[in-house]
Length: 161
Image 1 (cartoon, helix red, strand yellow):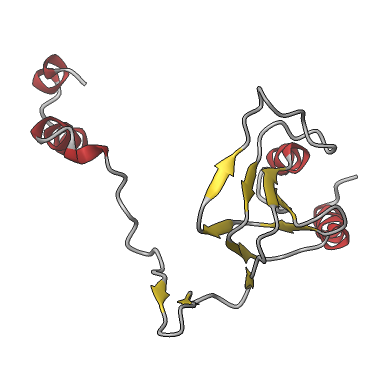
Image 2 (image 1 turned 90 degrees about the horizontal axis):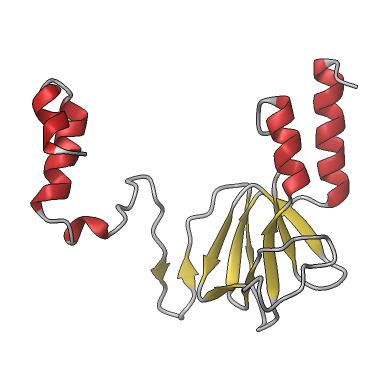
């Protein structure tokens, strides 16, 4: 935003506040603000964490095994087609046999974004993913069959073929 814009639009208060914040101390404003509704994770005396999970959240304790997290682009395109979020888009792969779908994921530790230049796509076609050995929190955990049922129910309810 330029000084000229602010001179031409002095009544644009939200932008003026943002402009003032950014020009006051640009280095300080590079840090991402934490939303007020974020739930804090506090260590308990025994070394575990107090997560304050809601009723849909599931804590997955990982015993040092790789967990792969990626986005199912087919689910994203279906949600866009329906005009609302109907089916979960995040895929959690614990092993070759265990896969879950979820609305959101919290990683409670270190994670790594896979470098697509050095890794072939996954068998499912995913080209970008996160690998972690840390514990994770799934906000809603669904099997593939449950996701298919969600979509079928939505289609029946809204008369979509």
